[in-house]
Image (cartoon, rainbow, N blue to C red; front, side, top):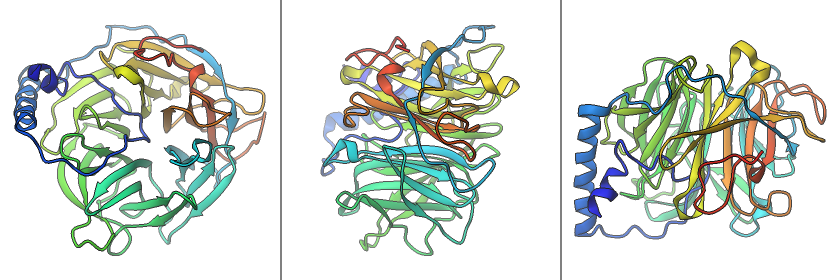
Length: 406
């Protein structure tokens, strides 16, 4: 039993445990037991196996064909962002503990704002600073930071910025210590990791050149404001941006845009060992650029990893690839096409998903994708985000992880 628990973090890992923008409720951090200490030692042993023999191992099929994606119509869309051109980028979800239908979609307008949407697509709040560029967004809820339990929203804007959401008002308030941003030396890609092993929250920041930096989030002086401490850095190898961390199983997924999708260990001690989930054509199912990554968590350990394949050579044919969370096996591909009230997603950057009740419009969950080319039906012009009922995309039966439903 111990061997299984440890090696799930290694090369045979269950490769996804949580979707990008949700984290299971966490109470007080428990004192580690002797068994948990043994678990940590075995995780290290499994990491050694990865370093020694499986770095760069791939689950892809040689010379895989370009997928024929299943067409899924969009259900709704957000209001466009305020700026023209390449502006909308990465979405994340905050789930209301009081009323799931009152949950929030949070996305970045790279050229000037962090935008908070209601699930009907209307804008609820916009945050701006003197620094115009806003990077990717992620959320973790009910995390323990110092003596406080917080819902944390993180983004990059002149460094790492953090906010919290007040459940009753559903408004974001800044909680970053000091000058308002943790210096990170640049970076657009971002994802959060709430370790199930240590209970420590950390943020991964990725520069355009593919440099990954992991910052542990603390409230060292107990004033309710958060700091970031650099604990680890490594190089992906070339341009990268999209990432998502799996809290339950200690995995970090990074999209190397012209190479493929990688899985790393998410703990600060994990080093730079990695396993390839899928490659770009001609050896894999992805098509450059590989951009957004998200996770779908299902009851009983099932679920999916989803990645955005922009297919820049044929941008109107971009698609999303789906992988089984347990095995990393390729499941299939889908496209978001025009629906009755919203057009589809083309050349998508960021994506997010949530499996669970979000009210009458999304009773089983939601999939959200950025749309580079916002057209009719619905609004047209500046970029925005498309919303899709999750059950239209993947099989949500408990224990599933191996089929599409579009």
